[in-house]
Amino acid sequence: MNVSVVGTGYVGTTLSACLAELGHTVTAIDIDEETVERLNEGEISIHEPGLDGLVSAHAGDRLQATTEHAASAETDVTFLAVGTPAREDGSIDASILRSAAEDIGRAIADKDEYHLVVIKSTVLPDVIETEIIPAIEAAAGKTDGEEFGVAVNPEFLREGSAVEDFMAPDKIVLGTDGDERAIDLLAELYQPLVSDWDVPVVETGRREAAMIKYANNAFLAAKISLINDIGNICKEFGVDAYEVADAIGLDSRISEEFLRSGVGWGGSCFPKDTAALAAAAKSAGYDARMVEATIELNDHQPRRLIELLEKHTSVDGKRIAVLGLAFKPGTDDIRGSRATVVIEELLERGATVAAYDPRAADAMADEFPDAEYTESAAEALEGSHGAVVVTDWEEFAELDSAFDSMVDPIVVDGRRIISRRDGITYEGLTW
Ligand code: NAD
Image (cartoon, rainbow, N blue to C red; front, side):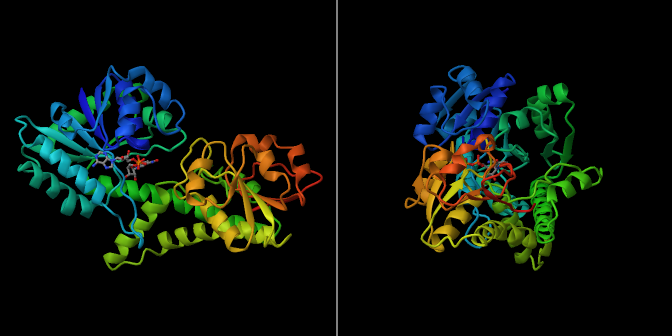
């Protein structure tokens, strides 16, 4: 099929490269000229395992990039995969998506055949109906469900394993409100995935599809916050939360996934999606108590990490090593990273910060230019009066003699990646 993808960030680039890999011809559209140029040269601006290989294999052949939205009219289906950030109050800012919707509307205004617009971005049902579809209709001078269609197809990939997740998903959710033309196009598009992996396809309404994404993320975030809450209780009673989690994970109703307690969840999705859900509920007159508690607990975990460190030493005027800045290993993304809260808190308490991350130091340096960014974990530890571990990069498990160069070898581990050993004062956040 001939497909266009608007927005080539983490989701859009993965979608574009994977659809090309499945045999489709893909036009990736982005307003950022540098991103477009790089894509056409077979390069990507983000770190995502396996994605560079797919892009370099298909660029200039089945995968082309452009800044011209008009190119979407030449394709059968256009995915909208632009950002939907949160406003200060947590509510969703749909202005980027609305503007991309207008661009597509203008592009298909003169097209004679049916065109399908697929919303990949995470967005609330009401916003789709009151802002996005009307924006396409107004710019195209056409009616939804007649000359063009809109489907909602949320994405569940995880950064760090985006390609793998896209190619072998747990489910594909298609919100079409029963529009047969949309269903047929999407069935053809995803056919190679569905037949290779026997992936369940959920056909549902557009409103339901949009809400499934929020419910999915709220559920996962709540699961982590709950195990973190239990982990904090365990710590108070000298109980190893990981042994507790291993046992409860054997209960098939609970499952072993997402039971690693620690310094909390981050990323570009959980924080903004839980906040958007809570804000939307509030605007509808409902207090989403569980979702709000999920967020509150997550905001507290990094502070607990610092409080544990301060049980051993006051950080005021001390050099503290922060190991790990990306919101999780395998990515250079620092959006919503717990390291942001940790650094903020340390600086506020008068510490100087020596930070290290194998991928995300540059991004964090833009946020906190006053911190020191080192070339290795060992260099961050050298001369430090304490260290906190925020991201579980594998290389941290290998650190050994590096702790000897600390002034005070106090290590507070927020991810259970360092082993307890002689010669260091070791505190696990929940064990
Ligand atoms: P991103 O910020 O990494 O990328 C967005 C891209 O859109 C950027 O390259 C930007 O230049 C481009 N853009 C902005 N306005 C544009 C326009 N008018 N036309 C063309 N391009 C434009 O975003 P992301 O992380 O890929 O997320 C995209 C959406 O997918 C969000 O709604 C997000 O919630 C959702 N999502 C993200 C993930 C994830 O892991 N990152 C997972 C599932 C769903």
